[in-house]
Image 1: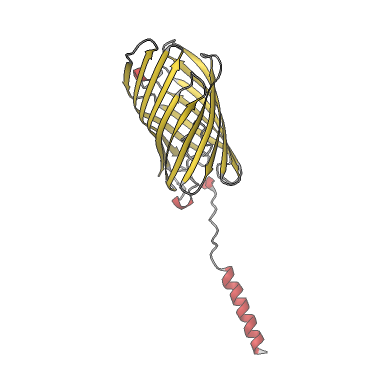
Image 2 (image 1 turned 90 degrees about the horizontal axis):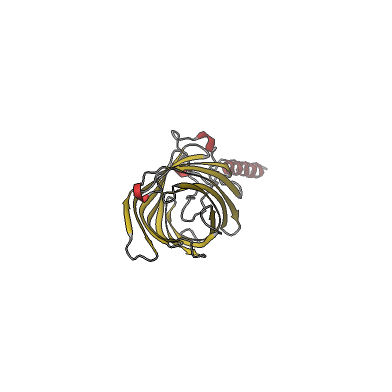
Length: 285
């Protein structure tokens, strides 16, 4: 009889100890409690989801109170427009981001150095300009899925670009609105969709023009280190007839949770489309 009471006591003690064990599940926090002056703890940061390397941006914002830099270390752009030829070389083109609140971050594009060369098809000598590029102020606000708890995320990015580049810049302020969408697919695939509308300025013609640029991208995470992006981009504007399209590819290498490198190219599908080659990185602090 005493043995039965002893066995019952041991079972009750075991259940009590099991109930008091700390859970191994990740601690879920309410991101609304954090802001610029009350940063999200570093142990609770969401996965790194930068806008680069593709044209199609991420709908996810930087965690509140944290800083992120996304940089084109080097980018070469070859372009043609009727009988005009252009070549741009960009170095240390940075997008500096700061998380303001649960769903909003502010961004500053800082184009540190640019070489801009132009000539006509019949000439061999280039007209060359070097210097600082046009800075841009951007704000991103997420409307759905910023906590990455569902399969769909949507945000809006608004920007104004200032004519700080002198002869290497556009020559006037430019404006734009971007709507990126992310759809999480099975087996570590992600589908990204985007529609971008820009009000650009042509300094040679001294007039503004409207540009529309839809894009679609698919990326796959092969493992914790290596991912691959393939993207289709097309653009139309009031200066040109027809659409100009490209297929873009970029391998992505994750060093750790806060640092990744990438490189890639834009493969032109039409004669007037820019051809680009780039290498860059993203770092979060």
